[in-house]
Length: 116
Picture 1 (cartoon, rainbow, N blue to C red):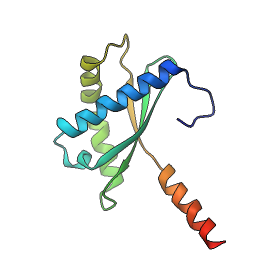
Picture 2: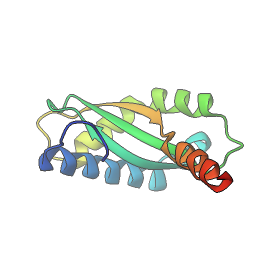
Picture 3: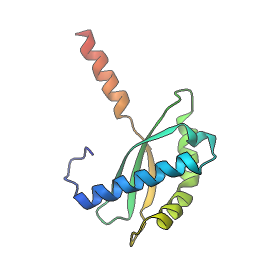
Picture 4: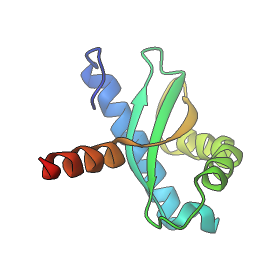
């Protein structure tokens, strides 16, 4: 995880476990085609474990980002419920979904470097 503040090993472990469970749900249980071609890249959990930022990329560039975000927002309570059933956490974080732009930024930087 790349953040400005150090992340405790516990928060990192919880984030990885949430990402694993969400990935399994996307593969095995989600039937929404807008979410089928999504790859999770990282999960960052707040210190109080009340929120988790879930970052993703879309495998098919022709898919609309706004539609995918809308579908994630609509499915977020279900994902949270399923995570609560699968994980032993005192508090199950509220899930917020974000498009991960880091890959595009890396590609832009590499393109610029290749021009030099």
